[in-house]
Length: 230
Length: 266
Image 1: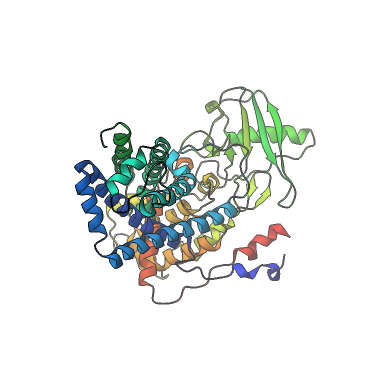
Image 2: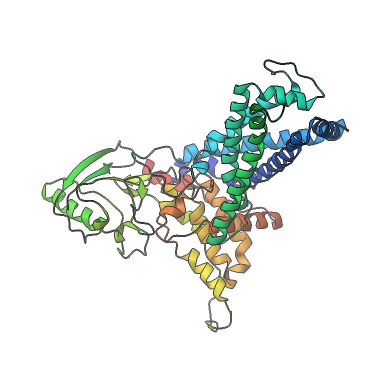
């Protein structure tokens, strides 16, 4: 062989953003931002159990300053876009790195959640778009009328439609699955080194948080379908 | 014991490969997987056929030369066991064993079960060492190492560079290997002075190679014959992040993988 035959375009300096490790840090940080939103959104939504007045007052509070609201919203949108962009870039690289599949391949040490991140992520994204169109924009609001400032009304009438609730519960379960791996994985990506024992403890913490989030969220449509909230 | 070995046969990198089944009887349960292949190769040679090519050296589980995927698991079904230490009694008699080489773009196939793992060598070359002045040998006890640090470094230093982590990773990532090499030196006082540069250069080289990225799923640690934990990946990420932040000068260029890879492609 001759050295001139080499394709020299691969001869380059790999900087932070080009490095897979750097991209994973971006994925972790944007993940944390969205996770914080998931928590605060859940806590706010649970006010629905406090009654119509409370959750509507909370909604008004969120809207008290539109420039602030849109700052938060655009931060979250940018975070979501970045999260997806690095995922796609890394996934394409991974596909190239492992082009030939084994005749037989067994998964012996990875969780179901970790192997299905590429599925849970996009489905949750599709759900978020649907969810925003339903409850924020009010474009999709089957079988009833969307009233802009009456969150309680929109919530209760929206979730009374069985398939809206079913789609919601399904997507939230996938979000839980995504977080079960993501919450632990982001600690790895930002370099929080930990012993094997702590690794197991952290995974249990991630699982517990995910379960709490899933139960917290799905308690709302289930309560509505069972008639506790009307 | 009786087995059917379904082995990947491929003459060279550029030729098409295929699975060929070899029935074997009279296999001793005390044989290692490699000895089983030795027996097969003897019969193949007697028949005038090409023996199965596979990498091996020490056969004591410490050199990291051998390794292939058996029934979908790198190094076979026993945890923390490399194929030369894997005895046939761990299989059921009459079983079909599907034997495949490591499959990853960064490990181009050379022949049958042998792959080119020089991408690993280039990562080591980029920073997997400590610089030591020659002349007089330093006093053995001049640098004290705490037991915790010694243990942690040793847990990473057990890496024999077999490549099972890359083979088992659905992304073809070498994060466990690179992490182990960065961690075992960085934890010790002798490795501390070059810690930042080591992380930067080894990670840069890893990313210049055709490896995928780490999604922290943990298949690598499951097949690692030395049971290296995912902690080393976190250490690599921490060192890399820290060094990227502190870096004052431009990074040195990486070794182009293509220069060497073409030896098998042309």
